[in-house]
Length: 467
Ligand SMILES: Cc1cc2nc3c(=O)[nH]c(=O)nc-3n(C[C@H](O)[C@H](O)[C@H](O)COP(=O)(O)OP(=O)(O)OC[C@H]3O[C@@H](n4cnc5c(N)ncnc54)[C@H](O)[C@@H]3O)c2cc1C
Image (cartoon, rainbow, N blue to C red; front, side, top):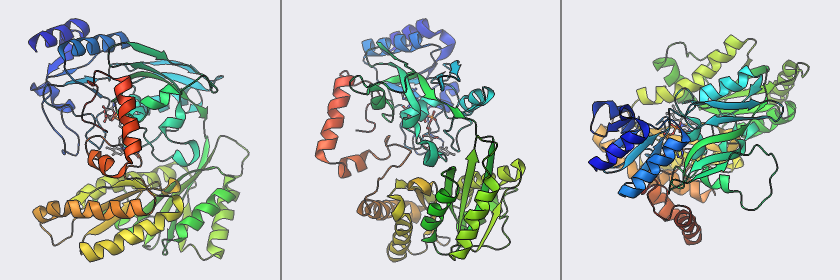
């Protein structure tokens, strides 16, 4: 394998090849949550598509498996390479190749940090809508490889819907130059969609042609406090109607998370006068200067109060106020970690069944794991709940860790009974492979394996992940 490392160094330059056991490789060999960690043979940082292609050819010749990595913010173990494998980090492919406002597209390289993609669009007066908590460090290649969701899916769709074309290095080193900027292109199979959400098992995305939109220059964020969980569905429906479908986000926050944010993260106190069992943080946004957002927000709140759905609400009047409300939404993720050990479930159900999911999980936990504290939050406007569970206050860590399989089964059984998915937006990676085997139909699994075998017959791209 010394030969492989030397060959990799000759392709990308010695300083961009790190041995897996070297201290400098540390940021690339484990996932932030600490659940996955191993020592790959090498970590390689190519600087161009040609170099990625060269790296893949070298690995194929040496029979070494290849694990693509972006910002390493994934939460399913997909970007962690095992012993003997080579991690290919895309971060040096970080150019915005083109912004075309008239065509409504931009071409970005895989290693662009998501926040930088958003800024490049904004600098051109346009909007790139993909937005998530890790946007300061995750990369667009990783976002597409995991088909990331986030807070704007309700209005703009998930990553899959943002892509018009891709450039991909295949498992034998060939490059598929599929970076077309066409909004319509019905010429056979839509190959790009295979690579999106494939978590690096079919090819290495090196660049993407993505859609950009008019910039929503005006917005109002509304925080709603209410007591009956089921009311969230009627509130969603009213918000869509009264906003003329200008609703971009609709996020659920339970009181336990609101309290945790206030307690553990500075500047995140609940801005409503009283506590409520449930909160929704939603946003009306528009690129138009004449759409009357304030009147829309007022009409929405009036109907919600009249229907007895709401206990309290505030509407932001400035950008600073908006930022402070969204800070609370971001803080609830960090606050969860600070509130104790937890087990996370990124799941989705039909939107109309979100309250039932949370109520059934809460009731089931009271039976099978009394004391476990449900911490369900997330993008419920598109049916996605982070159905997370906190360690009981009086339970020790070892007992909680031992109870995790039962907790997972409890949640996933209910999700599946409601016609939902065991992975809404984080993907499968290593974490949910067993669930794939257990819950996907034999037909679906065999089609996925056939696709994988056809596109990467050598089987060296991210082996052991997804299927
Ligand atoms: C605080 C926090 C909040 C988050 N919020 C959300 C959220 O709201 N919505 C959401 O969907 N996710 C969320 N995530 C999960 C994560 O940020 C996303 O999955 C993100 O899209 C991963 O991007 P990355 O660049 O970090 O990819 P990585 O973690 O590096 O890789 C993820 C997977 O993609 C593959 N991959 C990476 N780059 C490429 C490439 N160029 N070509 C082919 N395969 C590649 C890897 O092999 C791996 O399987 C959150 C994570 C954190 C830590």
